[in-house]
Image (cartoon, rainbow, N blue to C red; front, side, top):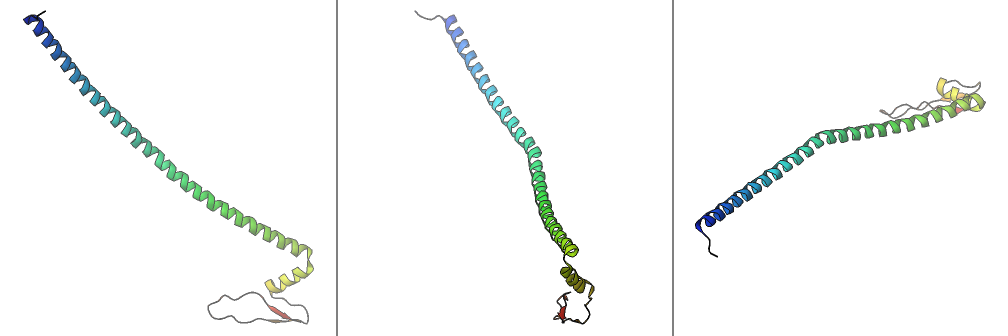
Length: 132
């Protein structure tokens, strides 16, 4: 069966229309991919502007917490040492005498207090040598 010229022009028009539609769909698909890429990029950029500062703040707070924990440990040790010293001062007369001699530079009757000099530039210790 031979095609007539009207059928031929209809088929050519139809093929041309299909080609135009295919090209239009390819352009739309490209634009959709571009929009999706830009949207994804914006999500990452905006997410980064919220997440990274929060992470930096979290790290700062973690460092501050570690420093505070170290201070608390040091203070607990200091409190324990001072509590032991208070207990000794209350309950041990011998320790109380030694403490008074060192801190207030007192001596028992008949004792001689001798202090040595330290080399220049070094702090002077507050300990006394007692000679009975």
